[in-house]
Length: 79
Image (cartoon, rainbow, N blue to C red; front, side, top):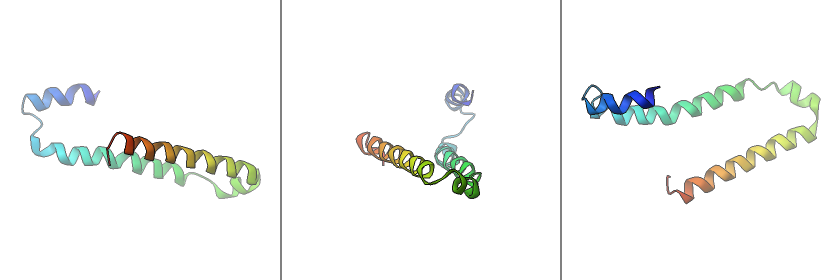
């Protein structure tokens, strides 16, 4: 919903230009914070019960996702 309203508010000078930088930084930090919060919900004892193969599969899938993210960042020249 905010994506629809913010351009209109900015064009009508309701959202000042000085707010754009901090809001953009906050928009970049909040997903990282939410992912960290999700990671804190992982119970290590449950991982120990399911065994090494499941832990290895999860670790490998995260490594693949990380590699894809890094490749996209470099390909799109974002970072």
